[in-house]
Image 1 (cartoon, rainbow, N blue to C red):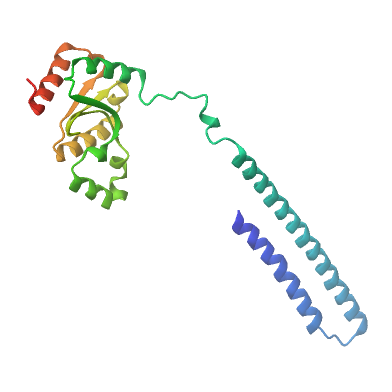
Image 2: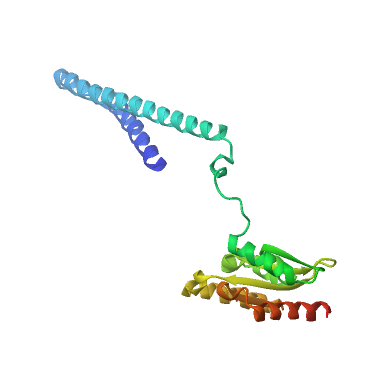
Length: 218
């Protein structure tokens, strides 16, 4: 739109310049013809000048409206649009499973939610992803549902993905597969738990046993 406006302004100015040049260059031999042509050119010049002024006023008014709009926006509180929205870090089902998992985990382990995938990867793998951000942008934006770490050393023990019905979608399955492969390359054990099986005793037992084997807590 800005380019079109600039082109219109340029055309109006150029036309007026051409008319002025014709005034100066035109020297007819017949006086009546000269008067008629000069009057015609003068009329066109006046019309173009009025059009240029009108367009300039239109543009200035438009700029003034934009300035007032952004000024009004800048005076609004930046969090006003979010005041009525929920402020939960994780969903209710994810929080429920987290509380359930916390009951069984050893006390020297912690659960962290929604940790970025790249933050749990091996340093060399992480650097490779950042060096090729355009290619791996999808992976860089991924998060882990639950990351279990040792409280004392902050060492990563394992990660857990809680899969609800949305993970049955073909695109979501491809995304999950990429995440699993990425974690595997950094030797991070990922346990996928279906939401409907999240509170199964055998599932919870396998998670606890793996954590104990990794940390030496028997």
